Image 1 (spheres, rainbow, N blue to C red):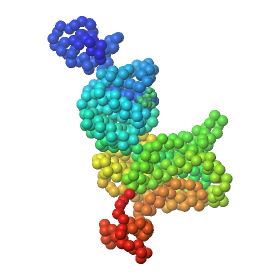
Image 2: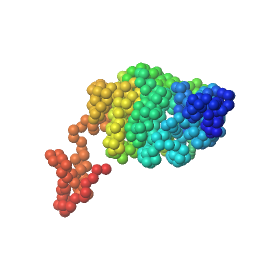
Image 3: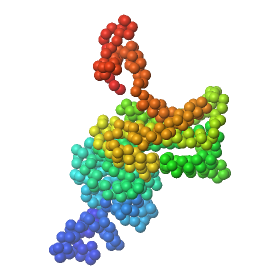
Image 4: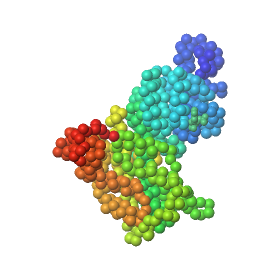
Length: 525
Ligand code: 2AM
């Protein structure tokens, strides 16, 4: 008896009789693992992929895969959820279920593909430990959760030794994305890609007909790219909030008015999901007819991926200042009670109202937002480049821009321009140097400066607009004041410095006349 299909090998499932025809018997033997029949004799192909984790993202991805013709076998730690899912959301589909990992694995075509959408951390390790003894060489485990890339690197290396192909895939787009087309960022064992490509590129979002999913790179690259995506998302959200803050406080605009402005912005170069939903949020009314957004406590939460990006930027010494500021802006907002108290004591400028032309200032804010956004993405790609160097990843930067072009939270028309920039020159040092973005910043520069200067004068915080501008001015400076830092370090700690005319040669000066000539070892943080 076969435990998969419940039929004896060689028994014709239509008649239930032992088949005597030699050829037919052979076909039945070969086919019995590929086809099995349920009690009511409906033919069900064995599953193309197993999916563990029936929270909303997992369920929606399964339904999405089913829509695209893939047979999925569902499993969940709490197994009652499998039956509930099959009886409700999955009713009438080709989705099958399993009550144990063993049962799930036995229903999968080879090489077996198992995707996990479970809580990041211990749950992922626990499922891997349970799956490995059930799988064969060349089978594939995919983690589609929000895992840290360092965990994915470790898992990838450990499983390679066991002959299992491990993939860590970023999945972005929220519940709707998972159901109707997410952005997928898979990385890990490259040998796995040909076996999952059809499913991944089948179910993902499409932008201008192209799939928002491609192979990202080795080991933790997929989850790293997803992490940077989330960091950029933090930055984009904060930039929109700064625009909102200026329109609200400097121009005294109502949520409805601001919604109309953002709707207009969404028709041009800022066309993006986040601007679109912000316009919708601003015009949304509570049951009493008042704008709901103004009733929401201004204390931002966070789950950590923005913070991880900032930590990674600090670890690798890349000036990803805008994402860093956006994380700190959330931290500052979270000190809500403290701020309310401080607001009663600490004074700013006498007025926060802008006295110039309103329409012109709205346009200035738009340009500040656009220029800052360019800086943020340039910084994000700087970080990707550095991580690729450190981990020996071959990253396809244009491909990454295309993966983010649709399906995910930062989807925008703007990413098409980034893709074009990398298509033109895959080795470009910095996106700001690309003709298109260079020109765009030139066009916005004056109004960007005016916006930041006005915000400073009126005492309205714009940490991301400001840091983006400071980065831009720093990046375009042939000479920064770090010569003085080097002198200070050498003065108090004999850390040595290089002369402009002789880079690479570190020397020490006895600045005080009694410091001696011994220098400390030089190092780069
Ligand atoms: P559950 O339904 O049994 O709680 C999102 O939380 C998904 O991750 C759910 O499918 C959940 O399973 C699963 N999950 C969370 N923590 C887990 C753990 N420690 N072990 C296994 N699965 C876990």
